Length: 359
Image 1 (spheres, rainbow, N blue to C red):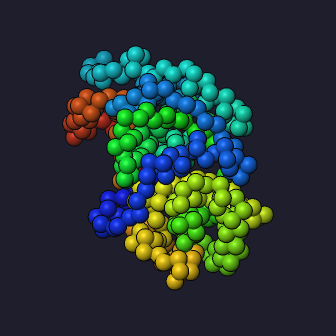
Image 2: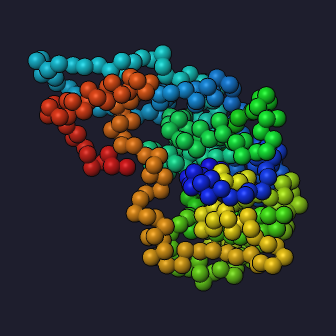
């Protein structure tokens, strides 16, 4: 759900349509999945305890041992070399202990043939994909799931800011929110065939590709893609989804043109407008304008959109820094990072595998 340009959108002072907490609740996975189960990917919904939510909100990245890579060790150490141990580096008391959650994750991975895609009620931790071994959201162990959830700003948005644009947010403040871990069966999907659709007054007003790369075949298939999405909307979504204004994502299987529902999002600045901007979406006149479908039309346009920076670059920090943190608080991490920098300046530290650390 979270947009990576929310601050830019808010700076434009756009007059958004009013959305309610109910509109956001309608987009929560546990709300819509039972209704559209036959039109989307296999998934499991695991209710989370308050203890687990507190763990996700806590500072420091402490992770379960199940699936955790074992760090290499130095066999011989010079007797004159000073050894500095980080506080809590071997503190087993900091390792999260959620055996039931870990068990359910392992069972889902087994049932779904070895891999799952995690998300919470609204958002996946796609901003943290860079930190995983596969550079994706493909998880094969509880460790993978915990790592992505703990490293994601988007997950933090789900936990703490999901209702911030709602006109009746005060009504939600005293209500307990049931957060869920959603584990979806992993599929190797083609990013080129994912599309976002904007619905205003129960009518599609815009369609855009989700991946901001240039795919020439999309321009040739525009009419077929548009027809498939409109038919899916009329046959499946239009009468089944309760909100009047919302955003939904679909995936189209290229070989068969079959459409799969991926997700719902609120019609709000928390949702990325991609090839549109919220000014034009908000001012769209259903009586005077026709729905547009937008694709990246050239490699030059794709390069311009990329702005020479990787996706979610602001969410990235070097892997060396993550390794150094070992779950510390901000204050502890700052102290150890300063020590490491001084050792580097004195020539006492060297990175033996720098080529693999540029994420």
